[in-house]
Image (cartoon, rainbow, N blue to C red; front, top):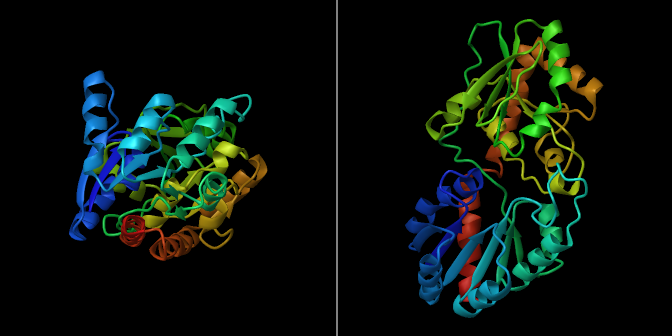
Length: 330
């Protein structure tokens, strides 16, 4: 079986976690795999469309083709799989309104043209089923062998709140600045570490700014004591696939999150972290964890167990391989 994966970019988190980490496993199963970014120039598009019949499956990550390009794509490709891990049919949380007729129409046409759909969570599956009956849920997982559990015996007094992500999501965290400043006055040994390519400052809270690097990613996560995932309660946030939480849990740290979408599935309130819906709850739940190192470790280990039961690249790679094989054999 020959499979072409079209990805957003080699350093894009979704590309790394939803495609690139599976490639060695798929090749071990005997699949011939090629990975390319989407063509841009006229010559790249010509070569791309000319090559499509060579592949048994073309796997498209997130991008929605339109008009003539979509019709030509459908005509030239043997089978098309579409993978998405965000509410791409809606505008993001910074928009005045989430509803966009253009986005919804492009999403519908793309899914109707495909032979199979892979959704990152159950909410996205329900949206996809409106346009295509062949939908499989595969979450955004981690390579559990790469993610070592953090050491809880640091012996220091400093406690680090941590957040990792891209610049498009940091606005969720920035809205929490008043919370961080209140906590900083209460706990002078508390700091906030942001791993990103964009940052902000707080008036009271010490902010550690760390540029994201792949080779440092796991070590940066292990330097956190408590992982944060604030969201808004809107259609864009409902489509989030919780990769941050899976990463936090993978290294064995507790999570405090907004109980929206997949966050509710990944974090069981009081077991492997806490839910927080407003400023008062964020301050209360974070304070509990800041003051209790033993609770942080117990919740962190419970989170690690959660990941091991279904959010590993090892398990999800098997699901992806079976999905592609079933699609071709059908």
